[in-house]
Length: 431
Image 1 (tube, rainbow, N blue to C red):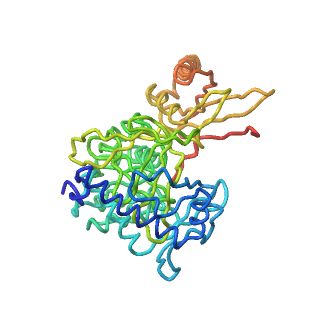
Image 2: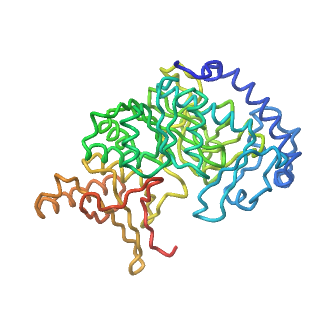
Image 3: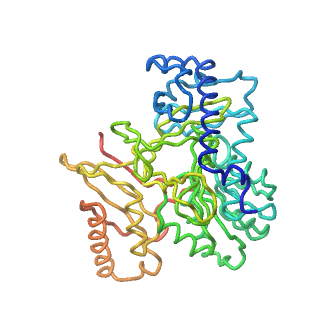
């Protein structure tokens, strides 16, 4: 099975635009009529539903920010009676109030379909064993891939995160073929499988990894260690969850499920809409959400869109691998620094993808340290050899970032592993 919904995934661009326009007109009307909050922000911009006649009118609508979503907590953006809601999902709330997203059964069915498309794009069929190690509960990762696997008809292992020994036991005993988790946890699982001598007992062929940014170097590292093909997947709770976009075998970007999610790229400073191929901030409008419609939501994720023909045959627009997030970006001594850039350097230089960035301010000057784990082979080397390694890393990091950093090589497995999203940055500055 090459496609899950070929009439959509391979639809001509003109046909997709007609469908998107029809759905955009309908969802704007519904949001305006059912949600006082939307009516208020549209009225402030002097926009009515009648002004939106096609996707060409999208830029007339106001943007929706995470601050707006927090202000709307808990029910101000709910567009259906509560009796129609069958589930909620929620963000972590680590930077403020939680954002709660609502789902009707129709919303769940569409979400499951999007995740099923992602699994098929990774080579999945009803004969596969899908091992879901994303967290369950309020986090969307587990429920999303679980639902997609069910819709495809695959045997599903709802493992959730944690208990790595049990993960590996079930992986071996039940013959898992597709692993779904964060890339940082996939890397940890790979380490654990190898250390237990279980590599020849696993039957994995593919991994679907998302929920955090990861580099091409990390992808190749995971693929080499587990002997699989690693696919990216993208989503966010505010829009639905994983499955907003997914990678195909070409691995040159993620196809966006355009029948359900309408993308834009804007300049994050001027809010000007940017053309395909130009990197900027990703903005999404949901086209079929019933309980929780979202119009022009600023994701803070940085990427570019491309409509170049794909060898897989899908015509869905692609978003590039995320460079980072505008709100994850560190400004150190006036320079923009993304954790993904640091990860790229480390993996190119042969280190593990386990690192910690520590930023502080001493005497009004930013300090910038990267703690990097040595491999077991490196750890047995001399102090002089490791000092030379640190100097080489300092030079490589300066070449990538344009600023100097302190590189600290630490013992293998001394940096705490994460079973969910990896913690990469400790910023001690009071800014």
